[in-house]
Length: 166
Image (cartoon, rainbow, N blue to C red; front, side, top):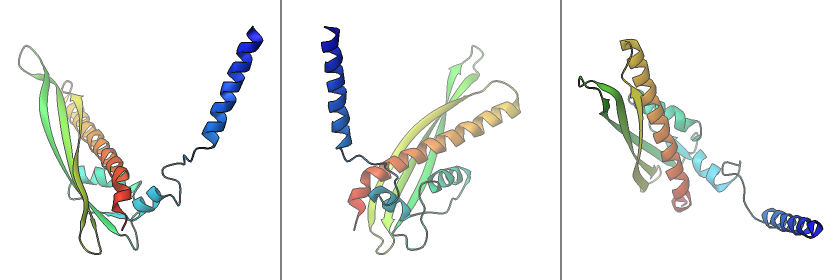
């Protein structure tokens, strides 16, 4: 009986292995892939402030726009803070930071907008400790927020990339 169960397990493993070997999955960022070619043809707008600089740095790791780029990506980050974890004396123990990134990608040749949209993310930080600790926590939270927004913009670009082909 155990021999029969083991043969079924081996047979199922072999069938699954053969099925996966025949699929056409490939790495998303593989050199020469359609996605990699699209991402290499995107140039970023110059950063205007600290938040957009963090966004720019994160996106420039994946977008290698250089000579002969076809698209220009513009991003406008927005953010807001809300108090959370209010103590009995009315002081906020935590802050929730919500951020939005409005993006648009246009073809450089004719100025036609290919895609635009907005992404949203949030993070938080503690309001307790010294002033230096609160400032460090706040800066770190804003950096994390901008990195989340950059990753979400990149995800959106990957999803629309087949439609952006000329």
